[in-house]
Length: 502
Figure (cartoon, rainbow, N blue to C red):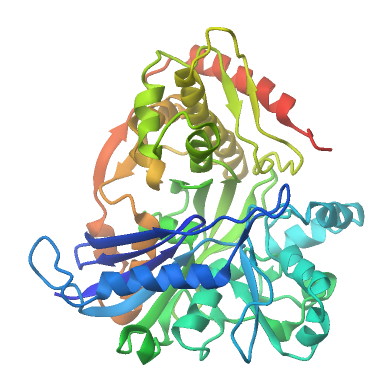
C-alpha cells in the first residue's frame, strides 16, 4: 500500500495525515504550538517552532513500524502535499535560514493604522481591482512592510537580496528542501495583497506601494506539480513534493467544489466560506474577497473563488476553555450548550480580533449582550456557537448577492463541523441544507489530492470526485419568522460591537 502525506500547518497546531487511494485517513498526528501575544492586538508565532512541530508530526506519521489498523505499514509515502495557514508571513536570512523576526500571524492587527492611511490615500480601488482583496491588516503585505521597517537593518538587507520572505508554505518548502526551493503557489500568493489576479504574477506597482523588493519573494508555481524532493536528511530518503494550497482553497478542492456556484465553509480557528466562480476572477461588490482557488499543472487551468472570512470561530470555543475556564476541553462545548433549550436571549459577538467579511471593522471587539441574573454558562456556550453560525450566514448573504446564485447546499468541514448542535443551527439560520462529508479533514485531503494528481496517484478529477462521500445532511427545522427575528437581534448586537476601539 502507498500513501500521500499531507502537511496541514494550521494556526494553533501542525498536523500530518496519511491518505490512501480511497481518500481514507490512515494516520493522523497533531502537535499544538505556542501562541505569542506581545501586545494587545498582536499575534505572533515562532517560525522555528512551526517547523519543529510540523516535521515532528510528519516524521511520526511516516516512521517505520507505525502500523495502521489494517496491519499495513504506512511508510510507503509516494508524495507530499502542503496546506497552510494563509497570510501569516516569515522573513528569514537566505544564508543562514534563520528568521529575523517572529512570524506575524493573519490575526494580527498591528498594521490597522497603516491600512487606514492607504484607504485615506485613495488606494482601495486600485488594490481591489488588482488583487480582489480589500485593504486590511489581515493580509501579508503590510506585515512584511512592518518587519522591514521595524527590525534593525532589515530594509537595507532586503534591498541587497540577503533576505527571503513568504507565507508558511514557502517557509516549510525552504526547510523541507534545505533551502533549495523558495516557491509558493497562486492560492497563497493571492492572499498577500501583492499578487495580480489578472496576470498571475507579483505586481510591480503594489511592490512599490508597500516597499517590498521583488528579490525577497518566492517564485510562483502551480498548485499541483512536482516541485522537487525533500532533502534526504529530513526523512532519511527523498520524497517528491507535488502540491501546495492555502488551507481554505485546499478545503474547497478537497470538498470537490469544482463547479461554478458550489460552496464550502471550514470551521477552524476562524470560519472561511469559499464559492467557486469559474475560470475568471470576480471582484466583489459586497465586501467579500476575490481570490485564486487553484492552478493545476503548467497550463493556464486556474479556478477562482469568492471568499468571506470570519476571524473568530473555533477560537471562541478555545476562549471558553482557556479564558473563562467553563469547559475543560473544546469537545465539551456541545454538551454544555445542549444543557439549555436556547441561548436565553444571549448574543455573543466574538470580535476578539475585529470583524472580517462582510463588515471589515478592525476596531470591533467581543461583546456579550442580554445577560440577566438567570444567565448560566450553558447559555454563554450556546451563544458562542450561535455567534459562529450568524457570522457564516452574514457571509453567505453577501456571497449570494455578488454571485447572483442561490446556494442550494453548503458543504462543511473543519473541527467544529463535528458539532451537531452547531451544524443544525447553521442549517436553520441559512434556511438551506448543510452537508458534512465522511472525511471532514478536507483541508489536508485537498493538499493530498493536489499532490496525488501531479504524481498520478489519482488519475484525474473524476476519480477524486468519486471518493467524496456524505456523512450527514442537516435540514432546516426552524421556521422562517423565528430565523428573521433572531438575525435581526444579531444585527443589533453587531452594531454595539463595532468601532469599539476607534
